[in-house]
Image 1 (cartoon, rainbow, N blue to C red):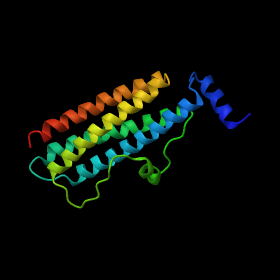
Image 2: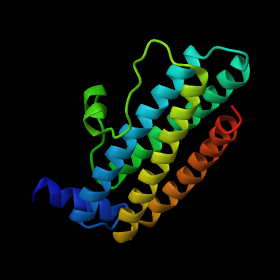
Image 3: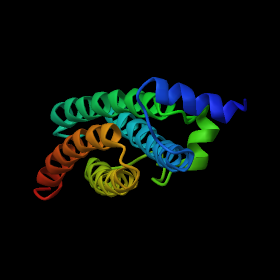
Image 4: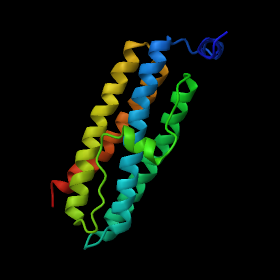
Length: 169
């Protein structure tokens, strides 16, 4: 019996009935999603650590809260990929090979530019979540689509907060 046949039987034994193609396509989408969430998490923490200006406390606390939410998503995304029989990210270089969001390595970024960049990345992340949701729906992966719906709601909330601040600066 091949390893892939064993994996399929193990998934079916756990009540996960996805085709090999479904597992491959969904786990690939989840790896990209995980890379983007890690990228946005680190950027959010970077901006949290380097925040300055008259709104320092409010923005610092907001970005800390956003970072906590993003970090919580990472474990759920990775474990879902593994649960369905796929693989997940292994390292920082693996993240950089799958991420679609850009890093920000500038020494100095203004608070307004920080928030505007996080807003744009959050909007893009929502689009990536919706695309992954569509892939999962095509394979009738109800559990992953359900998780993604929660992540979309959380991301839309973070986007809303950022948009309210950026729109008033």
